[in-house]
Image 1 (cartoon, rainbow, N blue to C red):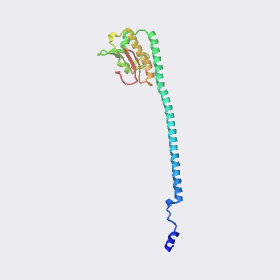
Image 2 (image 1 turned 60 degrees about the vertical axis):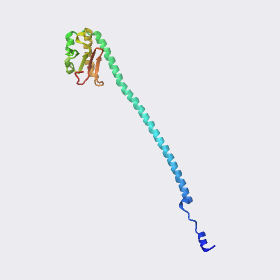
Image 3 (image 1 turned 90 degrees about the vertical axis):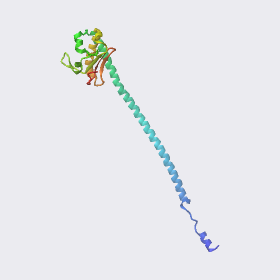
Image 4 (image 1 turned 90 degrees about the horizontal axis):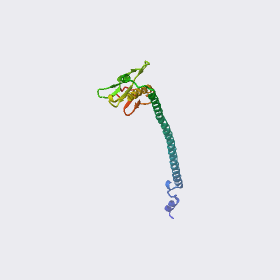
Length: 196
């Protein structure tokens, strides 16, 4: 061997970092750690999404149940009020004497267009016999004045009385309180709408 050859043989081969055992070990460890972190992240994400979904569905189910109960309560109250008004109407109808023409004319008037309505005073403020004032009641009769017989007059006066009696107490929960049939309609609104 020549001198130049020994020098080459005595020099260690040029080892790069990427070819070393340490580099391969670090690369394998980092890939394994990355894989573990990715798997744990995905599992954690799925767990959190599942937990939040279940919690949201539980809250939504409770909200729907509570809202349904709350909204059905007002309908139950309306049903109860309607039953009370019907019972009182029938009781009073049987016991009530027929109103005379003067009593009916005090409440209702025939307008030039032929319609029969409660007088404007019934809406703006009508003095009751006990000194209190009845207000915000409107009414309409869907037939001509000449066709209003004694029985219909009785029902119209009674409808006004019941609307006057129950209306003020019930319009705090409902838009209006009314008595309605094929030929008559009276309502208590608690709002300024005298032409209703």
